[in-house]
Image 1 (cartoon, rainbow, N blue to C red):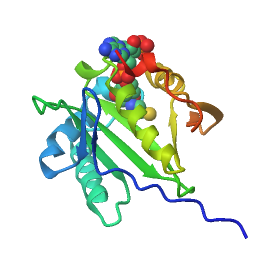
Image 2: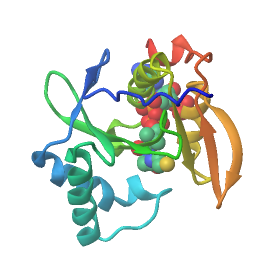
Image 3: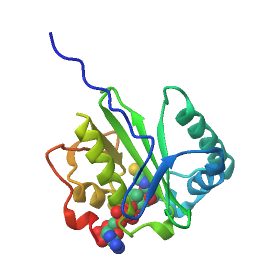
Image 4: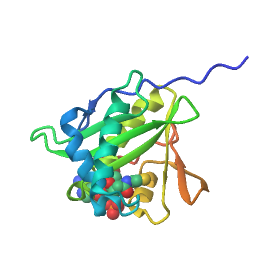
Length: 180
Ligand SMILES: CC(C)(COP(=O)(O)OP(=O)(O)OC[C@H]1O[C@@H](n2cnc3c(N)ncnc32)[C@H](O)[C@@H]1OP(=O)(O)O)[C@@H](O)C(=O)NCCC(=O)NCCS
């Protein structure tokens, strides 16, 4: 008889050196909608109209607040000022112990190492619980590709025009990627 795959207890929130990671609340809706309506953020994701962006934000909040959540989602913000810098999501996959990572940073907060820092901490948590993360992106999304490599994700066979990755519990993120 084989043991059932563990289900990861996704954290409700945590703090890294520079970023506070917390559950979504209704006050985040405008920020989430603005991210989805921003052509710079959506460049490698797909066009979304302003109306659709508002709808996506509402549906995400509902999914994150369901018990149990049908989508895990966290607001990322600066601990001192409280300024929102981005959104992180984890969607359930067919494997109970793995979730699919999604990230959207405000363009002004990209290229600062925040994404690396936040995902490295999440990986530590999920790997300790016996789980992991998968991710996929369009081939031309080079920032995500660099992020995956920095964090020790392993490339998988592509599917449906997407590049796919899977985290590896024994591949610690490069310290230099998170310690600056
Ligand atoms: C995908 C995304 C989250 C990646 O974020 P990112 O800004 O590239 O990643 P980080 O925040 O970890 O920043 C790392 C970069 O900052 C640089 N950096 C600058 N200051 C740094 C510091 N103090 N510490 C660490 N890195 C720093 C790093 O060198 C690295 O640059 P490189 O990618 O050119 O090597 C971001 O580009 C994004 O939100 N994109 C739009 C939405 C999107 O496409 N989402 C993915 C859908 S699948």
